Image (cartoon, rainbow over all chains, first blue to last red):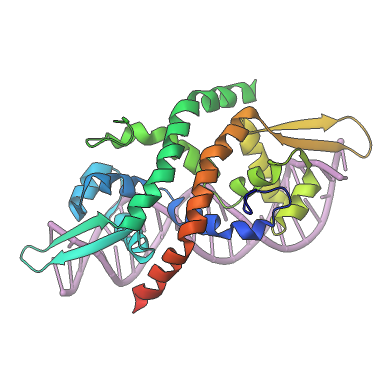
Length: 121
Length: 121
DNA sequence: CCGTATCCGCAGGGATACTG
DNA sequence: CAGTATCCCTGCGGATACGG
């Protein structure tokens, strides 16, 4: 039995997950990673694709993702400047378990909505 | 190819995941669900097992989890009062993809720490 | 074009005290 | 035992303006 999910689990042993969730559980990280899945993107491309993110948050979130090794930042020394963001192997591998979560959410979203509906009743 | 992760993905189609992440991406929800995996738990049992959660947050988070259909709340009409929280089938099924995420985090946590270390350098 | 600095409002979450 | 009510503080995240 897995040490992180077993019966007499010491919940502090789950810290790695919490560390991950704390970082990518925010409003934007996952959406950005998703955008980068098909290949490198420039800053404003990400802005447009995500749509309602502010420059501030896109910048901050990209920094954090870079810091944690999920994405790379590549500056092309030219004018006008060009910066590409891309998934690292780590970032790409992260999307695998997340894909399962997306699938789960798709499948069970109606059930959740239904539960919320019944809650008030 | 999955509509939620395909190439020309409309990111609004990913809303279900965001809805899930918004709810369980917080600091406590996942830890609570984890605690409930081995069976029903009473309020103060959860308090003790999680350790550093406040009554306030435990209460609030349990309500949300109940509202979304992840857990049930069962009141035993006796004195002193007794309330059991338990995973629903939905909550239990949710832990399956999360297990994959836990496994990923366990495996790649060192790489993330390493990346953070190199970032300042 | 690609950001950062600054300012600010608001919700998340802790501490504490009180109730059924 | 099992919560809720209240207060308060912090940090997320938006808007805007400015720098490389």
